[in-house]
Image 1 (cartoon, rainbow, N blue to C red):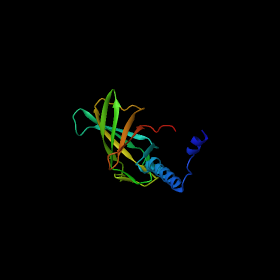
Image 2 (image 1 turned 90 degrees about the vertical axis):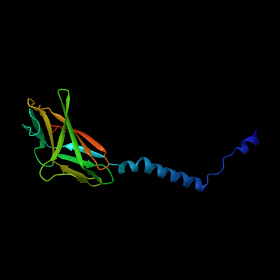
Image 3 (image 1 turned 120 degrees about the vertical axis):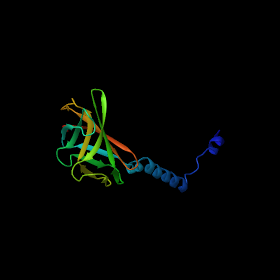
Length: 169
């Protein structure tokens, strides 16, 4: 029995084995942790109210154009939590009212027009405007919320729900 155990002894661990394990660990760290920080990752924060406007529609009879615009400039902060620059080339906006989804047109306030370039691990302030065609009897509720999807050049979307009035943090 002693002879059998003696034949099963472990070989000493070579330096090549240690270096190979270290290399595999470093590669795993890069692919599973660091590479995630290189992907576009936008976070949005509303810091100002949106002003509501209702005007007679120039496009459709019996409809109104419902507009949501920032009261003050720079009312939305966009943070790029990535180690690479990201751009927003446009955005889509929509809201639901009485079980119906209204898709809108996007706009901008003053000279704050797209594309918006956001440097690595930095933040920009922007002023949004959304316009919707709604029925003539539509009245904007005080607790209105709407969704904005920011779109990057690759087509990736980052959605955020905004409110007519800035939420308490």
